[in-house]
Length: 199
Length: 65
Figure (tube, chains in turn cyan, green):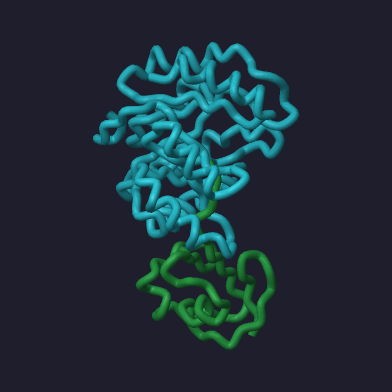
C-alpha cells in the first residue's frame, strides 16, 4: 500500500529517453508497472499527444518537480502538475548541487511541509540522511526515496549503507532506492541492485 | 508591452493570462500556468491581469521522471 493505494508492482517506470511514443507504450505494457513518472516542461507541441498516451496507458501517474532548485519553485511546479495530471501524487525533487544532483535537504523539507499541508501525497527524493528522513516523515510523507548514488561525474555506485539504514529505521514508510542516471548498461545493473532493496 | 514567457521576451497585446495563453497558441486545456512564480489555476486565468515585465510560465506534460 502506498498512500492508501494498493500496488501490484514495485517498479516505477520513467518515461524519458524512449525513441518513440510507440516504444514507450510498449514498454509500459511489458513492464507490468503500476506507476509511471512524468514531467512538466515548457510547452512543446507533443504535450497533448503525450497526455493522450498517458490516458491510454491506464497507469497511476507520478509527476515530478525535476529541475527545481528552490522550495518555492517546487511547490509551484507541484501545483501546476496537480492541475495538468489530475493527481495529488508528486515526486518532490529540489536539487541542491548541479553536478551530483544531490537534493537540497533544507528546501526539500520546507517544500514537503507546504505540499503535505495542501493535501499532496509527497514522494521525496532525498539523501540517506536519517534526520532529513525524520523531518520528512514528520511533515507527512509516507514514502522516502533516498538516492542511490550521485549523478553526473561524481563517481560510480557507492555502497549505500546509508540507504540500507533508511530502510531498517523507517519501517513504517515505503521507500524506493533511486539509481540515478548513467549509461544504459550500468543503469540496468543499478536497477537490479535497487530492486532487491525496495520494500 | 513586453512580458517574459517561458524565459523568452515576448511582445503581447493580451491584458489577461487567458488572453496571453490563447494569443500564443497554447492549448489552454492541456497547459498549466504560473505568473511571477505563483501558480494560477485554469479557472482564474481570465480574471488574472498581466503587466509589462510579468514572468509567465506555461508548462505542459512531457516525458520524464
